[in-house]
Length: 524
Image 1 (cartoon, rainbow, N blue to C red):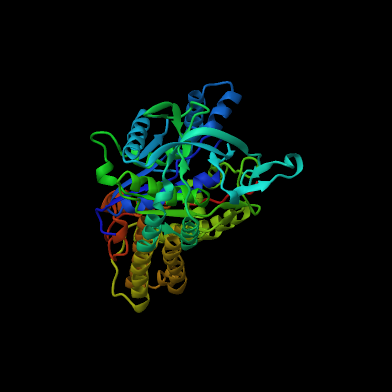
Image 2: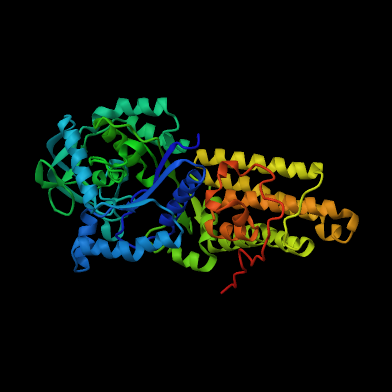
């Protein structure tokens, strides 16, 4: 990607009917890290997240709590969802709520546009509906109930009975877009990633598409259909449109022209909505389809997908309060291949924290700075002639930076971190091999000592820049301790794509004492 290009990226908008769990946190930090990387590379970056607040499930939850739907969602968003972003150090540029006037206006304009273009018609519908999914279920996700639900049809995802609904609805002519969608997937093989997700979407569309019910008339918690206010727009259609309405679609002076299209990162369970229905709606409106849809896997706890009903949801705050937000971000982005399912365990997170963060990166930083203070009075020394070992480190730093950037282009945060971590491991090995503490005892080795420490210090400078999108807090602390803030300016102003250059940390910069970046965690 060339610096300066538009990079618009979104999380799904979350359904705030309950408190967030680490699965929501996982998606958020992944998108935030991708956005930070692009923003810090000079790209015209915009990160969007938000909440999806309409639908029958929300209406029922509010009624059960004895409040209006709007009061219910206002409380959830302010008490659970805004604090989550703060807790995870998310630097989102916008937060959209589907109850905001800007969204409602944009949705009405979009639906009216596809109606005027002949893609919406009135009809009747009878089908099994899952309130939990807010979806009329396809045959593949309807199973026979067991136990207390014996004799009933239940949702394969929620294991709850389905409701047979018969309504007069408006329909979107989704069936007309099958060939156009297959052509899109053929011409742009990376439109849906990873490949397993793409294959699933292609197979689904090849089976033939049915027209989609896009309104509900049985309740009124939603956005009214512009030409028939006895109907509200189906919650999923309303939700998908947030990606356009947040940029000002349908209004004067918005950023839609500048920023659209963008990339959507979603959980694989909502892939079809984003990779089939959404691009078809955009085609119907005469708009560009997204740049791409990336579906990540599920986070498993004890081998099962997290869910409220199975009590496997873990609040992100529990982990952040123990390990810190940087460790949370690092762990979920490096321990799981982005795009595949991954298992979370407290033991694994604790072990990685100790080995990779405390003993690996943290120890490298503290001992390099301590030796600079001890042997050179805290002043970054001037390197003398470089040996093959030093040049090997320089090449490795340049390669790691380039490879990490390429991995980010593929949305593989895990591979990017693995590339960057080759620098951590190489520098730790380099210190062992060159033994600066032994060099310091021999005055004739003074130049060699200066070269070894400069190599470690400039390597740390590169690491601070490369890891700042992943771990913004600890890298900012390290940047200060290296004297880089005073010498080179703010960390967030350093171009990540230039991080692999060598000799950037100025000789004579003053280092300062560094407390452990990742302190020991006392086991409870």
